[in-house]
Image (cartoon, rainbow, N blue to C red; front, side, top):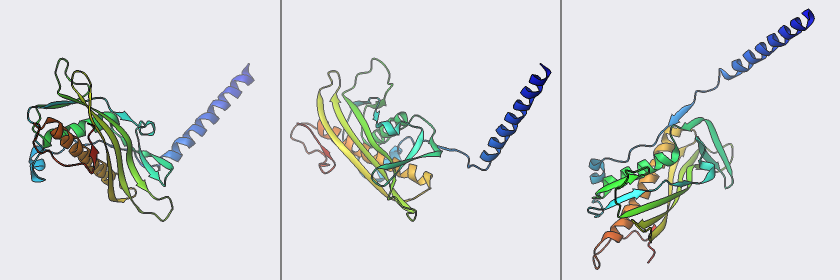
Length: 233
């Protein structure tokens, strides 16, 4: 009995020493950084970029968006070459990415058009909406060629979207937005998040232009963004 107690104590001591050694190995690791997307540009800054699309009195709702499965991790993704992705243990999203993207897109849209409201799910109940938007985010990451000598890449956003009529979900328009933000210095995650947010502003531009075309009276001219989105007749 006594010998078993000594053996047990020895095993516990060895386990504690090993555990302490493991903790010591992690002390030199960099601290985690967490990032969030913004609220979209303010009306004042939107006016500085040019006239907004005309969508007077229109209420819009963004449904919960669909993320590509590999983007559902809280770790920020960097694509290296055509097939390999890296997940950064020390650079993470500080919020659910789907909620952050919807919030930012709604903010940019609300700053650009004369909407009655632009809400994102979960939105207030019993509120009627003229249009409902379904987003699918296929790419939202840094991207760079593979290789040890590479120091610069780009931010990459690829999104498909559908605009549905409020009430009966009839399909009114659909399109794809692809954004490449060049000049990203690998390892600068602050800059990467900023470039990705610029991509979301481009996505909002496409959505506002499509909504303006759907809202325009028959026979009136609508913004021409056909190079970036295709309206389904």
